Image 1: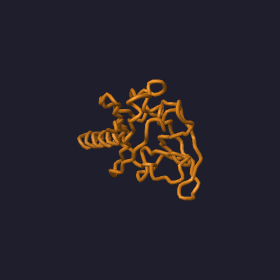
Image 2 (image 1 turned 90 degrees about the horizontal axis):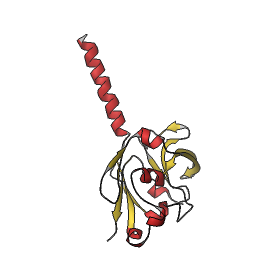
Image 3 (image 1 turned 45 degrees about the vertical axis):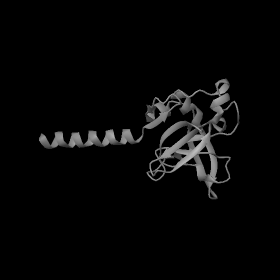
Image 4 (image 1 turned 120 degrees about the vertical axis):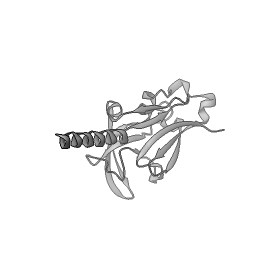
Length: 159
């Protein structure tokens, strides 16, 4: 009986670790950090994009990056003007890689460019090297801002 309880505790701890690894921290301008779960993200409308990475075709599925940010309280559209035009998104990855995307590049009111927070590639969940989340910007010529292992999204002001 003790072994069974120990095994159940280990399994529960492993499941909790997997769930936490699938969480995404989002910090809007107000500075109040929100944590979105995989379920929160997957509840948003899904999009698929076909693109290539270094010449190799790939198909990604995920959600629009602006939808994730809106879910966390970031405002777009008419509210994106004035001083907020000097705000950007800092994307942080588990390997400490960081990229910046200007807010107007994300806002559908400014651009038709699609930026995706992907969670699957070629019909399979992203592996540990890429996931659980990856930024995909299909229209960019170089995938340098396609951050892998995304853990946090932070709105920062450029001063």
